[in-house]
Image 1 (cartoon, rainbow, N blue to C red):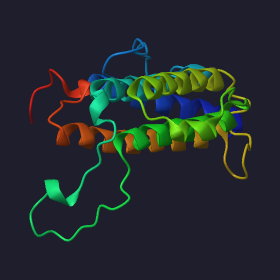
Image 2: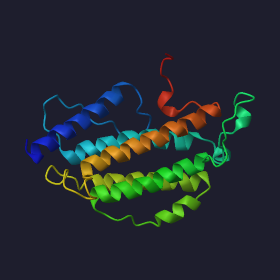
Image 3: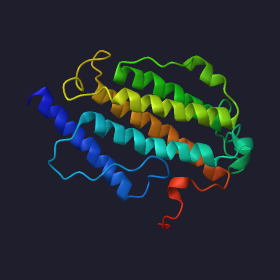
Image 4: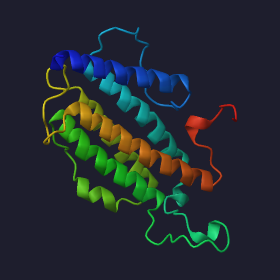
Length: 205
């Protein structure tokens, strides 16, 4: 199997996953959903990758905006769980720290995916504390991600950028990491009796 054919198969798989996620209702608000693509159709890698970025962007912007400003310093503690449990929560990240960590990770991974450098001081992002500043930085990191994936083609999607890592494999890692952190952010909202925007209006299972 040639690299070009393999790239086409992989990008089709990614776009199919995005379409399935849209049908499940976990899209939230934000950029328009990607158009449906017939099975077997060739998919431009840049467009497929961009659709994946848009999906996680909608979810992340939703939770970041839904959390009240005075709860950005919230972190779970033993006090809010079952009395007598022995789990330690010292050093657990606050909601703000989860978001800023995700922002920094996005810049790091999408810079490699697109072969471009961020035009911001990514180290300084960890020091952000206010909701307004963090939401602004979050939006900026997704704008950067969209710009980065626009550089991906069928020819370079599986070329090495870091050892065995390629734009395609790094995209999977970037989206997986962002989704993992998003899952934690959702739990923080739930602990504060806030329904995540992506879940609003969905039937209870």
